[in-house]
Length: 163
Image 1: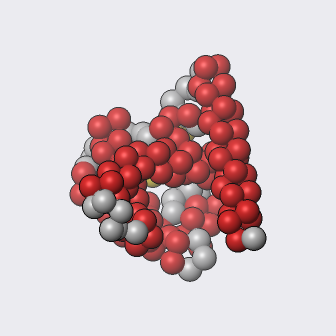
Image 2: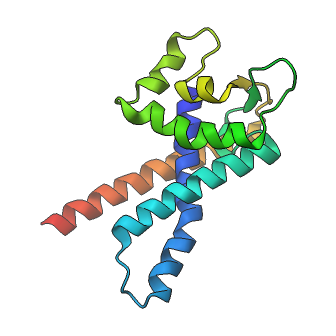
């Protein structure tokens, strides 16, 4: 459950990070670029870069840090995955996990090391190794509440637009 909540937080953070380039692209094109296909492609690119860079330098992401999770390599020769392993995990691995209705993520519930298909492909494992302070728990609650409120407002906005 912690991995799922960490992923939700990371998608939210990735969305916030991707907003600047998306709005910049629309602004620089003087409105000629519609937000649909370009914004989705840009979000995916920014999200993969965010996840890869954060895990390469800090061995965790904002979402994983909030839940005390850290990424490690499954190999015994070193502790942390290299850049190529992280790129594979965050691009092809995530796509593979989502391909059949998220079965790649569900595989982690039945695996003794809780490895998703992305983890198996890249040779990584997510471990609970970081202590979660009281401050982090408060930030976690506020962030999750913000995500729920933002999603609620988006749904309300869509309901009013379609009427």
